[in-house]
Length: 263
Image 1 (cartoon, rainbow, N blue to C red):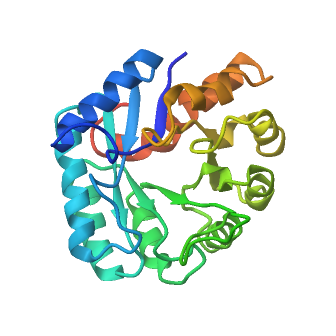
Image 2: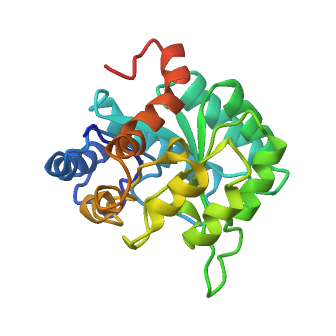
């Protein structure tokens, strides 16, 4: 099957440069039949990045994807703690650059009003917004979003294309939390390959609202592919999840940039 991965990183890979790390990631992807990857965040991370840190990490992703334009897409890493600078980065990397999406992590919770101008601008640019979301029994990090908070954001921005990273971690609750919001898709990546996650997501959301993500290299491609390959769902639903849904989400912005999802 054709496979596009919406959730990959450069951190924790061998290599001294961004392009060397992406080359290594693509070696692993080739072994598992993953054709395209979306990458975001740089060589090292911060829970609460400064504007300078955001710019450096985005520069590292730009440097990496420049070497592999036919294999990798970039998402701009932003922090709603720094709205003006994040909007500047969104314009630099997406409006005036090659990136096609936005990555939000744990600096500010997804229901905060500070996200509004970022999501509004991303929607204008037809960029998808991938928000890390988790529900932890030990308690979330300060600023770490739950899928419930992402649902609140989705209600304020019904035209935005949002992706709930990790299906909310606690996927049984995460799926239910976003179910009512058609503008939220879920990303399967990052958690253990537990039986039932994909079947429940298909049953509750429909196969069109699920996208494949691995969270590589934090998780192996193999363990995350198993969530779809091993699911008791039809093959046409598996293909939607593996590539077709992400291609549909990215098609408008790729078209604006003169690219085709089939290139």
